[in-house]
Amino acid sequence: MNITLRQLEIFMEVQRLSNTSLAAKKLYLSQSAVSMAITELENILNVKLFDRHKKRLYINSDGQALVALAQNALAVAEEIEQKFSLSRDGDISGILKIGATTTIASCLLPEMMKNYLSKYSNVRFSLNIKNTHDIILNLEKFEIDIGLIEGICHHPELITIPWKKDSLTIFASPSHPITSEKKITFDMLQKAQWIVREPGSGNRAIFEKACSDKLDNLNIILELGDNETIKQAVKTGLGIGYMSQLALKQSFEKGDLVEIKVPSLNLHRTLYVVLHADKYQSSLLKHFSKLCLNIKHS
Image (cartoon, rainbow, N blue to C red; front, side, top):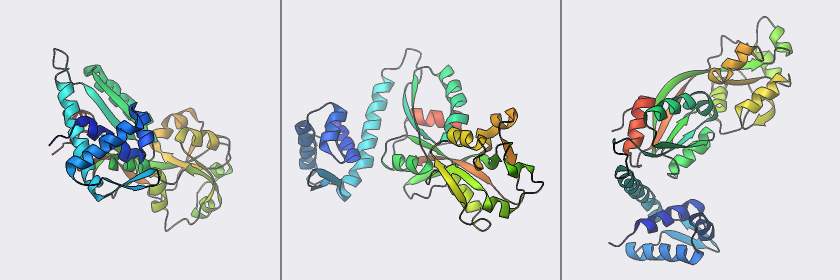
């Protein structure tokens, strides 16, 4: 078998982009070099990895079967390289690719990464901040090593591990009329204008599930892609919102925003660590998971 790591690297980029021209630009190669590498790999394996239609490539079942194996082979090669380039004191090194939702990335990860880097200075983090839906897609395509999400994941190829407890909180500007009410009713919430995260966001999925039998078709006037923009919009009094208590702590302390308490509404939730079941678990990933996330790998 004469498969090379370079062929596998090119294959992974082509399957990610479904286009040899784009893959060539990403890898700083000519398009002909990329096409040749894919053809050589297919000849060695004696299968077609892609279906060709016009100028696009569509990965087929044989190609899909190769993705996890190729990713793991590249990960093992990278770990070998890292292991023999360690500093003399045997310090852990390498790059860990993390996908995290907005709340986790802004409220939990900075302190965790700071503490970790204070002990292991040769480690580097690549952090992608996206919503739960997109992080699951990144894991499915082996584009990140680990996902930290706020929503629920039911993907059959992903391992979902409960991590931390959290709660969503409804909030408003101190000047909003709803804050003067002694008791908040579901009718008030139904009539209010809402500013919320985009579809695919974990906290939106949790909120909609918790309210499914109490609120119907919220009057959503703004859908925004990040928590800070939502907080700024709510501060103007334009509408009310919901968000993790973690992300609202400082605003509540300053008095910029106030909590709208609805005792009969259960907005408790769990934050999750998500891994691909077929992904090679490097020593760096296992070490970070054990120290920072308190989870064990099989």
